[in-house]
Length: 337
Length: 281
Image (cartoon, rainbow over all chains, first blue to last red; front, side):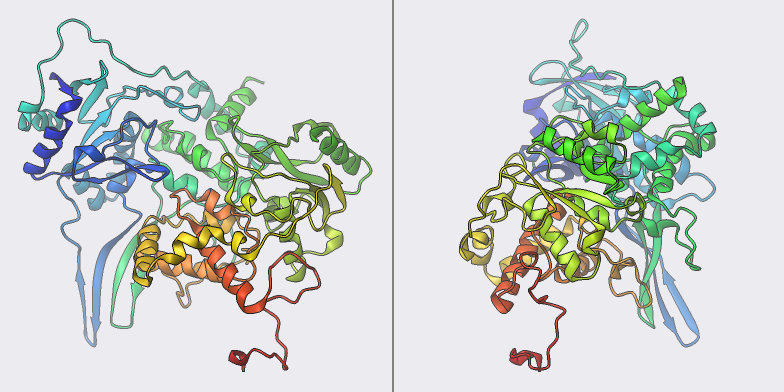
């Protein structure tokens, strides 16, 4: 289904969502950052950014969440599972790269163990994406097979067609239902071919050359050389929309506790530390290699999908200016040797 | 100045004084630089110097990967060189293990970093060689040095609490703040210890408060105000406000500023039986 949405109608759109019982999450300016955050009013929406600082991931895999509570008595252990974690919501104004990260990660969260926290949230949340009309030098979606107006993962895609107007394309049944629910705020589709204002993001490397090189180069000097500057924090993995590793800890006393799932990341020294003290990935080069291998080799082999959507967040936040697309360009060059 | 730096680096690598030079290289975008580790004299052209040289390169003295490269020469601004004095005092390095190429500096960052506004170390206080014209280090009055805190200190207690709760709520526990810090050098951080679990690893309000406050307290009387933690925080928590407040309290209580004088006793790890501070006894 195609429609148009005028910017002036954002207000009635957001109000309409509220009336229909949706919680609305949208890009919101907060000092130096623009973050996907809950909004009450259309005025809060920021539209002039390239990409939000936080990714869409935290609405499906929060940085911390309780997965179980328990009490321990003399002859009895009682466990209680959390409820109400999946809230009917709309994420409005996320980017196509973020939206695409969801079907990519559906594969792992529905694999051998179905992660109900992920799955139920996926069902409860509708994604209304806005195509990118600008980009910065960190963006590389087109190099990993995406586009600034890619539809995969979105339920509805909006694309700017004039200063005030967006073309509305429904992608899924869920998206179609949402547009139907709020029909009055949309207008008829434009006659003729609309002028889609979409950024032109040039390709930085040929993804086809990456995996074959990785297959042969588990041992290579480039891993250490590139990562000398890495300080071993987890910023890259935590802002990444597709990094999904987590740790499970118990926060407890002698008689009661919560089992909690927290983000974890392969760049931390402790991530692979064994109880014995042995660490199979005991240098930053090995840990950096793991990040690249997981995204561009292991995940491809297991799930037939690259675990990177080219959003560039990891490179933007890196304290030491490690740049993932630069690494992939180096690999492409090495592959050509 | 860039040429001078490159020449110095080349000379030190050629004559075997050092095995590696920790310096600044061009970044992935024009408004960034990045740390580079030069091991071959022919690579010295990778070194650069400009207002984006914000990093405090002494942090690489704690990392095993960069330690393995051999004896380093470090390109250090006045603020960064203060770290060396603290590291020496805290027995983390020996003076003969590092070669210091001091650079005189008029400030870094765009916009100018907060720390540069009240800089009193335009010329480093410790170095083996100095690159750039020597500048006079003018003393900056106490109030001016802590001017950043003026607004914050006017807040009521409950507003301060609210302010920090809101800031810490954003924390994602990526530990960029502690990993970038040259003075967070514990091989195993308290947050990584779980028997007992001193600090909740979860990024919830309790865990975030205990982490951020612990980090700041471990730096009280030690932090040299390089502002790296604040620069790298991906969620924009004003960490330096915390550091600075504690530095101010430490200075008021002990009349001590870390990293200025190698002969000063450390504020936090010096014990004397005849200590005249009453609260100590």
